[in-house]
Length: 51
Image 1 (cartoon, rainbow, N blue to C red):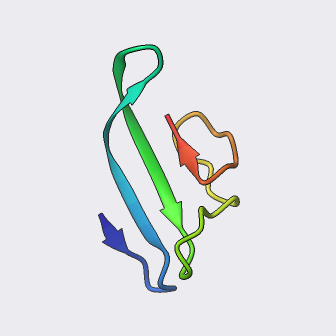
Image 2 (image 1 turned 180 degrees about the vertical axis):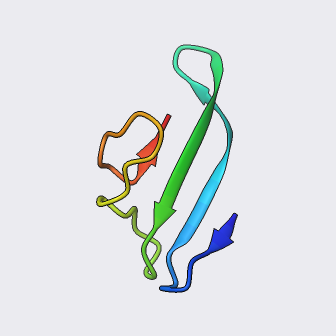
Image 3 (image 1 turned 135 degrees about the vertical axis):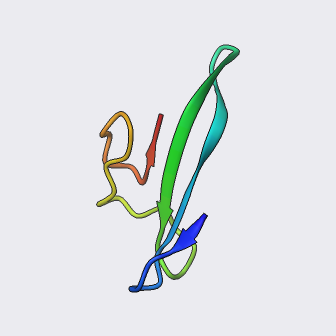
């Protein structure tokens, strides 16, 4: 976890990817705690979360 200079929070680590596989996930949150839709993490889906 880290906080960027603009106050956004970046999280990364292992996660469960359905149905039961472990994978790498990353997410970026806005200052209000909502997912940052401009973030294209692993998987580049533009939802604020990448797998």
